[in-house]
Amino acid sequence: MFTAPTTDSMKGRILIIEDEAAIREMLGYTLMKEGFEFQEAADVDQARPLIERQKPDLILLDWMLPGMSGVDYARRVRNDPETRDIPIIILTARGEETDKVRGLDTGADDYITKPFSSKELLARIRAVMRRSAQDRPQGTVSAGGLSLDPETFRVTADGANVEISPTEFRLLHFFITHPERVYSRSQLLDQVWGQNVYVEERTVDVHIRRLRKALEQFGFDRFIQTVRSVGYRFSSQ
Image (cartoon, rainbow, N blue to C red; front, top):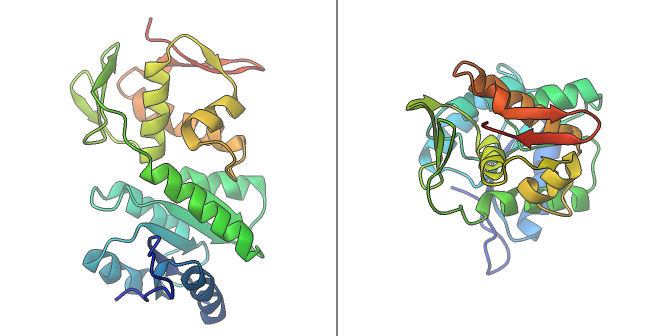
């Protein structure tokens, strides 16, 4: 069972996957104090049955885990239809840009470098959960053979299913509903991720690259165009 919060208002269920007991204890105390329920696992093998029994609202996932690494597990979570919509924040001591990009490439929603303060952690959790809980746009939208159904989070290209993460779905939905106009990285962050969030502009490039890769096999990657020194534009023309 998830550990109950000390307040009357439960803000969400969070699964901590971290092999260091001291860090799990610190994270659990911080979450419980803020009104979150939490459950903890020392590795992926412990985490799997917990998720099967009760899907969490967010996963705090350590990069360096015994057995399967957190990065590899994040990729599996994203590829499983039953868990692909669970937000993931990766925790790691790796602070290089290449490491951040690799972590985001797995489909993680955010990345926080150790050591971090409780305030920063909570701010990132709230931002990711807020984005995840945003009302889904209503009605199927289409452009040039691409079709997005916000009710099922299904994307099709000329009728064939396209596998993308929830973040790429929101990004593609925004592009399709705002065609031909050029948006800077900061504008896309505000529109897709939300204002005042702890996300670097580099994150936009990572998700653009992943979205293009998903669309490439159908020939629709050309719809997402780079405007040098400015940003990105969607055009199905």
